[in-house]
Image (cartoon, rainbow, N blue to C red; front, side, top):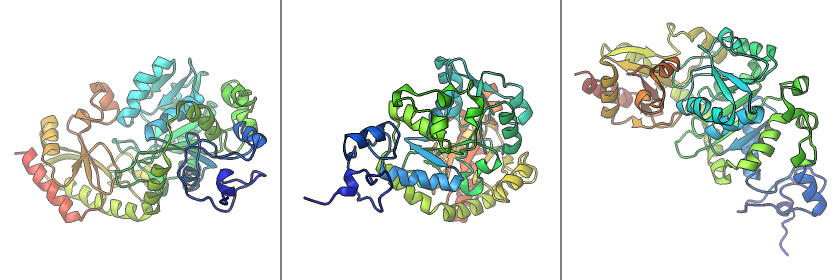
Length: 424
């Protein structure tokens, strides 16, 4: 009989401690030791792998590394960034509740908040801007969270996290942030007051435009037991798990345990182990790639700013950018590789530039090793009204560039020929 003791126990020994190593094998489920072990795992009394929709050893490694990078206590990886956003909100929200949102959002996030969640009885209240005062004005006793992107996509604004966290915590709710654009190497939101961090791992972490994935990181910081009436899901017995109380029984990581047990277990936006493996490969080169991304972005931004065919450039590395001082404070002098700009000629010039690109890929993604471009008004934000696009920082002519790793001379040559075609 082959020796598969570690495998049949799902990577754990009989007493619930982790085994030294887990053999690699293809499976959708993991054997239990006996009936008592099965019951203990399913009731969340001991850790263990049991069904890949819920957890597996490869995803577990990715979760631990993402949590460590963010300075969190635990993480949950899921099938996409939007699944992470959805599960994060649904873990705290209920029909009749609301959450307050800074308006500079990725288009799909905006659509989900504005048009899907209301059908579930959950209201997203969009603040006038990303300031703490604007957010505070919309909070009430039914508010369950404050949500923002640490660096807005594609607006490029940097949120004053400490001020917004103070407002959220003063109102008795957690601060949730999407840290996709910044990555944990440029910004660690938990150290500035965030309680929950979400990521689209598809972007900079994966880094090559090949693999979808998302993550939710638990900061382990929010005092759920101090707000028991507002968050009954964390403080009342959960009947599906023999009356476990998440805040009491998992004090260091109640958010991710509840998100996994209630959201992922029952709705199944699972990240496949193969996708987790591919994302782990990307994660290993993140620090090297970010250096090249940033160097190229600074050079492209300087080129665009000095080209008379360009009406405006928004780049957080420029001193005249509204978030320049916040970027210095929160990003320690680093900048993300996202640039927005407008060619002279408005909407039509934006479309003409977009169509003329040759090296830059016309893709919805960002954070890729390849340089990417998108015209948000006609793509990612096309479902929004003019006022909604304006609040999100999108003008009719806006082009968002995600600067990749190619040689800078090749990037500038492509921008030059596209601008020539767009402005003649």
